[in-house]
Amino acid sequence: MGSRQVSRTAIVATTPEKIFGLLADPAQHPLIDGSGTVRAPQPGGPDRLTLGAKFGMDMKIGASYKVLNTVVEYEEGRLIAWRHFNGHRWRWRLEPLDGGRTEVTETFDWSTAKFPLAISLSPFPRKNTQGIEKTLARLTELFPG
Image 1 (cartoon, rainbow, N blue to C red):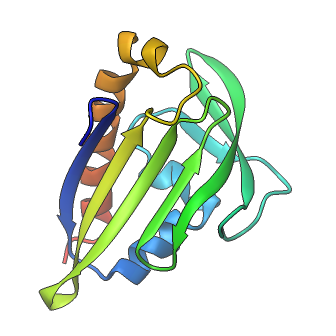
Image 2: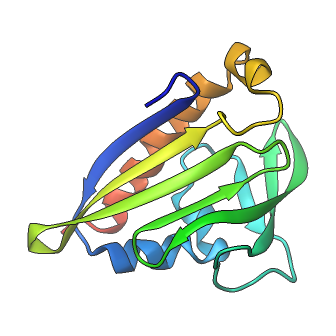
């Protein structure tokens, strides 16, 4: 990964399609979020994400706030990424493995941000790495095999 991305990978004991089902449903994001910041989808958004879909989420880091996301990468059952207002992306790549398992890679990518240097100098890369690790652990707990 480049210097403006952090990623972690885990093996999950279910198919890419089942994991993608969770990722493509904004109502499920609080269930898997390991950062503790994702609270709930905002009303009026799509029930299922597709390329170009916009969806709002209620968030909390200290104070509550709202964020609007746009799906910018999409391949059914394999890849989904959304960007925030600053342009940074959250990307999920799913690779099928033998035995109905999936290699799941989550990436926080700020190479596409409007102000990538500001993010590089902030604590967000480190904190987001920790959040990704916890998210992947939650995902493996949801599908224990």
